[in-house]
Length: 116
Length: 115
Image (cartoon, rainbow over all chains, first blue to last red; front, top):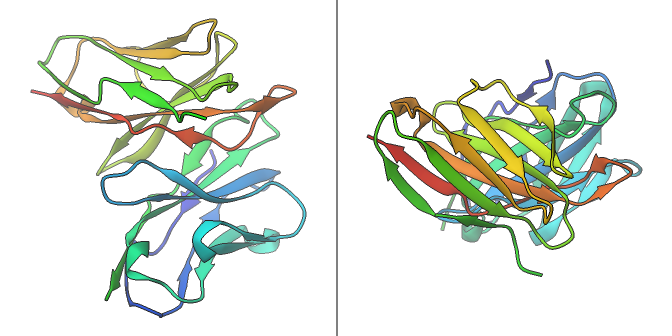
């Protein structure tokens, strides 16, 4: 079964620091990759997605992610975080070549706290 | 476009009861998925419906069931509630092309508390 690992459970940064959150998945086939964010008291929102093409994808609010197929990774980055980026971030993977092609598997999430 | 809506937003039930949760997808989205979110287990996939048919099912007991209507609205039902069913239940909808679903958009969830 596929799995998604987010090794950082809680990250604390000061404003203007750079951010990188790790995401690794276990499936060797073709995947779609996503990062979602859940701000306090709000519902899950899509930050960015990768289906194919350029492995460096840009999302909303200045976030970007790089798909490295050889490392089964899809790390999320932001050059300079703001206090408003405080939220929980989830990596998700969707297999597109099996009977479970439409099932999103989520990582355990990373809580990001940005100190003003 | 209106987002995914879920009703009710909050529910308190007693062990042994059953509950039905409702989800209205974004207009034009025909795929609806359900997830359970808990602090201990995180986000876990329950099932996905497309054109009134269940296409995928997660690893949950048969007490968890769902259905989808012709207008793509979906309901999920949990029978014989247990304390461990207390969770945030999320619905997500996505557009489809040639049967494949793309990015999912989530609703605010239904917070179920079982006492």
